[in-house]
Length: 458
Image: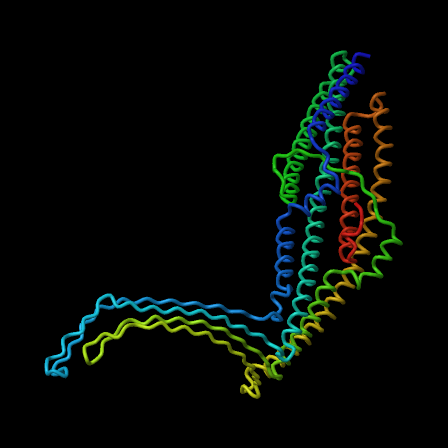
């Protein structure tokens, strides 16, 4: 009776400690983890910034369709002191002409102009360039989606590892509590002469091993939690728990996703978009064979203030001010009839070869994706079967452990036999946990390949 009371009190204290620890830790749900990753993950943030760059590139301001307007202005100032001599020159009365001295002779000049240029036709080059920029924006969105998908896979790989180690830690903790209870029972039995010291020593050895298992599992759990915090870009010291409930998607739903994989797989969409961009590259290169027609317009204003100057007579001529306004219109036609073949012809040939390479890449990626989907489906089904087997194995070992426990308490089996039943149950439980999360991760990889990873609720 005393043993049972103490055992009950120990279990209650253990549960209270667990509850207090969990109360200090927030529960990080799967949805919350995804939201944090989308908001804070560095890789996803960089991908979003790349989308903004592509969005800026496809703007009308970067299309070449708008005219150019250039303004310029200039100003100059001069201050000159001069002394002009007239040797051998005489005035009408026969006197030598005196020197012409001009001090602080200032001259100034001002000008301003505006020039407007507009390309009416450039062989449709900017038209296809503009379309290409829009496709590159769509490509950047697909690349960002690829980054997000890879990050989500990375997130759940770590998230489910936290969940697995959490369950393993609880299993090891339960095993430790059972070993502690067994030690107390052995000590009481030895005290009343109902068992030998060997039973006590065996129980102490098992407690040591179970304690090491708990410490190791706890360390591994802490390490993986920090890995998850890095993925989520959160404080490494923040404490949290994760969901350990797993739900699998029905086979019929997965088959429906697989039939639509060609339209949804991000890798296939990326290479298809690259093919469209290569097609525009060819059209842009071909535009070099056509002429370019442009219009220009200009307006100018000038003001010149000249300095005083001297004459041969020795007189000083005062400065003058001259102002002018000018308007101009022009049109131009440029046609690169032949440039030696180094630019247009070569670029067209290279663009066509690049397009052909992209077509081959599309076929290669399509074949690889089909293979990867078939492999992923088979792996997932195999892991599900293993998980079902492990579940049944746990049930069998639970029954075996409970019967062994009864037999041990009745003294019909030794502590070593009881410990073996306990170890078998512990291994079955940890193997089941591993199989469960392996099956879920294989499902996530299959969802990524079918392009449905971002369309489901976890």
